[in-house]
Length: 579
Image (cartoon, rainbow, N blue to C red; front, top):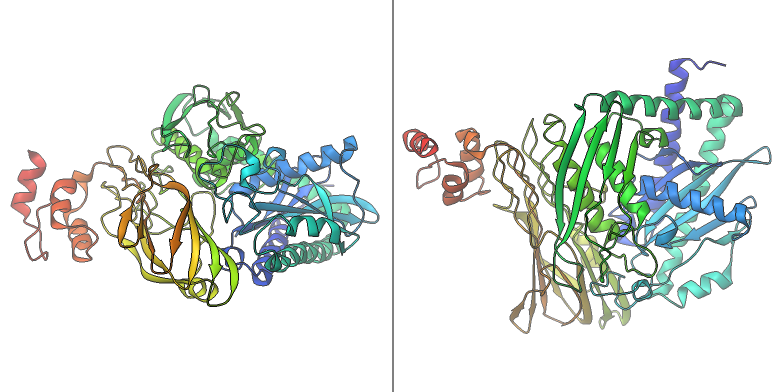
């Protein structure tokens, strides 16, 4: 039976709407600011046979597109092999094991079977970032972990809900291994409720169109996504394209890690070869295979955003050469930095390789760090323990059409920093500054966007601070003559003395007491094109808005501006640019 295009389109967006409502329900019901305010979560629908992605919410994190697909696939394989009990209606499995199709331990995935007429039709799954899953440091971002056990509790797929009832024994085990356990029930029930909403909405959609038409539509959407991605790949000239992206260090050994990428384009396929990348590392900047694959997929989604989110879009993309590198982490390698940091370096490598053949589609490198800052301790005023997790935005890279966005979300997602007011209400902190980081955007014909600078003070508490960030050694790459964005900077003020982490933006267990402060300046995006070709009036506007200084306008853009910062000296500018 052929489905007419209008019906197919309505079903496509109906499936996405189901996921959007799951996302919204999850955020609105969650207790933790990282989910409720920052939206560090995602919901999707996955095939019953192989876990292939059917649909994901528009507001879900792109990095979870691939990881939940592989996590669901692993769950199905374990059920089929007898390693995991088979599902019953209203069961919900929980899993955060990174080696079974995941990211880091704080990203906890739920999976619920969806039945129609007594037969398993698909899986509903979501991922939420829990503020803490135990481990050696509050928040789980152990900058110097050398084994995954130091990062927190690792859960294989187990049924946390059995026929709709929370398994109190499994939940007790979880609570006994995490901090502020009394607050986790809010996130657990919100995550489960989101899947229940998805079941209700998907049932309504299928009641409207019928099971047979829905199954055919899902198959057709997957096929069309593959066809559309192949058509767009054909726009790239056949050949090989290379790039290198760098991770500052692994947090243990103070040496940079290289992501070496060679992309081969042949007809309607792309092969991403990471052979030659650094070997597995001692610290937590290893990436599990599911995250590495998902990072490639999300990079291509950035380049070709018109392709529908479906497993079919990934079919023309092959990833090889990750064996024996830090991009294919195996147990017990620590991985807390894989999703939030390494994944963004992988995407950056894809952008850097494809900007030459696709200059109108590919941007310069974005900030490329989630700015993971965890703070945990005892709140003397409220007489309770706390774990605070702060993520940060940064500058986007300039592109062929315009300057980069300032203080945008990370490459891997749509998570936004929680409002300062919410953080001050929930935790014993006071923000003294929260502003754009002037001068941080890389110079270019279209400059990079600006990063963020914030300063936060600990109040009425004793705590430990941990950082797992990146781009502290090298700024985001400029392209086609553009300059790199500013590097990430972290300064901890203790007893009035400044301290810079030895790994620049990675350190754990820094003791803080009331009055101590943390200052974080996130990277700006890379510049796009020759900065000496930027319109002088655009440079003047940036100076007038205090985004760049007079000296930066002259040295970086070749534009001479009057001392009062109100007009361009055209003659001096022309002479400088010609010299």
